[in-house]
Image (tube, rainbow, N blue to C red; front, side, top):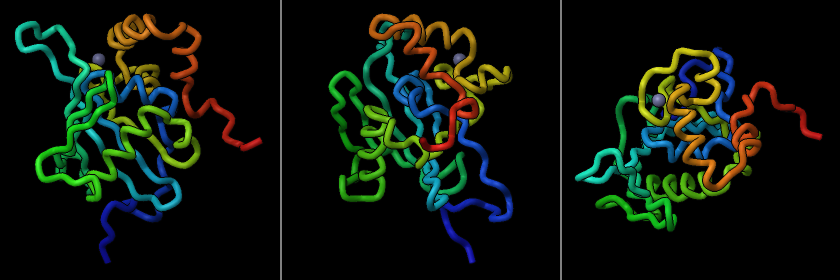
Length: 187
Ligand SMILES: [Zn+2]
């Protein structure tokens, strides 16, 4: 019997979530994020792609607009549906053609945006994974530290520089505390 969206091999131990929920707002909006969310209770998962728009004339200029694609089937490379466009300055969402808020994709998009705005409810409930590529530029991550942050060293510096306008250095450090070094035991 085939069950969609569930873990491929039941005998394989579940992989450890590799992203700290606190880093989700930064990573999701870094530019070229591909992030998988797994419901720890049910084992179901979905993968999202958030691609930032750039100015047509000045390609270096980033716009606060993201194309959001969502895949809810097992294969990370297929099954993506254009869910909608996210305007990160106002958090307004324009749904993709033919997508309704009540549909599976519409509900997933609403959940995603709410989670980017406030990722804390995900802690301990939803595992967050990157796909081994930098969430800013899409290049493969090879250094263990980069794999922890989901950003290559140059991109991490760039993201920090952008963020420092609104948050402190300490807040950034806290965002990227590897999940494995956190106390997992509830108090
Ligand atoms: Zn990068």
